[in-house]
Amino acid sequence: MKVIYPGSFDPVTKGHIDIIKRAQKIFGEVIVAVLVNNSKNSLFTIEERVELLQDALKDIENIEVDTFSGLLINYTESKGCNRIIRGLRAISDYEVELQMALANRSLNGNVETVFLASSPEFNFLSSSIVKEIASFGGDVSDLVSSSVNEALKEKYKNIK
Image (cartoon, rainbow, N blue to C red; front, side):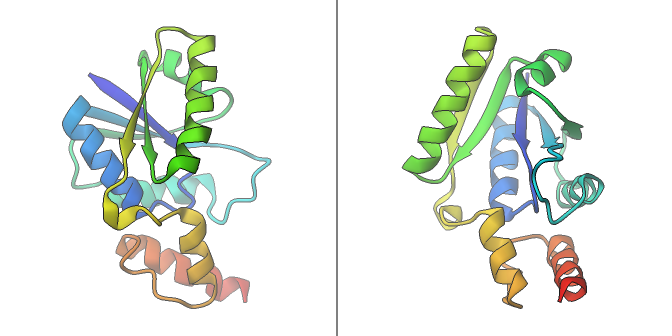
C-alpha cells in the first residue's frame, strides 16, 4: 500500500522527515511529491529540494521522491494511488488541510486524506521558521538535516 506526501519542502525539515518515517511504517511505501509552483518564490530550486530530500531520506526504505505540478488529485491518479498523507501541527493546519481534503474528495471520491499529528518536538516547526532563523544566522542544526543546514548557510551567505 502506498501514500503520497505532497509539499513544497522548501526546505525539508525534521518535522517532514518524522511524518515520512511514520507514514512509511503505516503504509509501507511513501511517494514524497515536491510541488513545482512557479508562482511561489522558493529559496531552493526544485532540483535542490529533490536532492536535499533524497539525501535526508536515503536511509529509509520504500521512499520515492518525485515532482508534480498542477492538481494533486491528477497526480494521485497518475501514480495509481488514492491516499494522501498530511501532517498537522495545530488547529490552523487542520482548517486549511480539511478544506484541501474535501476539495480533493469532491474531485475524486476514491481519494482519502489521512492526517498525522506532528510529534510534540516538531509542533512549532515549519520551513518558513527555519528560513527565518537561518536568514539571520541562527542555528537550525536541530531542525534540519546536516545537508539542509549546509545548503541554508550557503544560500544565505550568497544572498547577503
